[in-house]
Image (cartoon, rainbow, N blue to C red; front, side, top):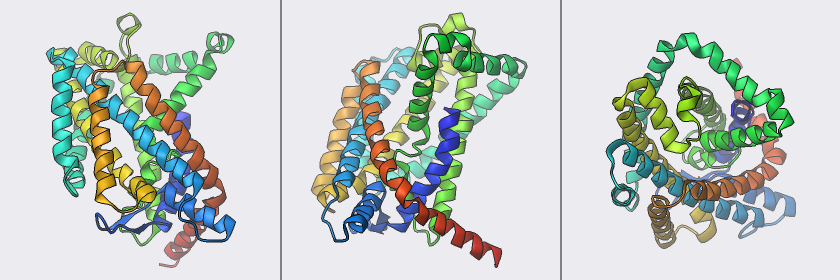
Length: 354
């Protein structure tokens, strides 16, 4: 996970900068839209030397993204339903229906998504960070043992001999990608929407976001889990694992806190992925309300299904989608990286003479 974050910061800079360079005006929502589908399309036209209606790789990327975000929609409702069942004994079907209704109220209205995210994200991030830092500071004497366990499990002879190193690496990279999205092509869809004259600034912001997301926030969560005696968490996964850890550290308040903060995280994530989807739906079908609305309805259906599906099933769909996105995105990212690096050199030159 840490490795994917370090490498991902550079990748995130390149893709966000390219998204800004090749963004287009959004006649449907106003402002701009763009992302990998658009700079992949530009690269295809450059290679073939003619204008194209669609690029095959860009179409595959957009379809993979829409598949991935349907999978993540399922993960969201599955996690929230599980958390509320453990914390408040609320049946998953009730939690899922409420989540779908609240989501529909926002996503089916024009530009309500951004307004909601502006309110939810800062509050939930601050709350979660403060609680996790409090737990880590109060157990700071145990951190050396935690780091020792991390490296033993990842690089120990037992892991290597048993083929576990490959599994650890693969799982860490997958979860790192889900966390910071670097290289997958999701975040550039949002970066392209920014009204920024210097594309490099968005690239630098995106690179910083990867560091904060994975190195800081995800590491804090990992420390919280590893500070719990192993016998209490053995065999657990998902929200049950996190809530068991929080119950150990904070008692019943921890279980309730996780349920509430997870609901906020998940709700904002669902709103965010539908924002990502806008530009990809537009690339495939044009700037038409019909297709935008149909995808939102599909995502809401997936949100409902995820609340009553098995945990492994909903993760698998997201894994497949994000894997395909990353392949198609990276295939074009490398040959176009010189554009982003040239923009960085120009930006540094401007700053030098200011």
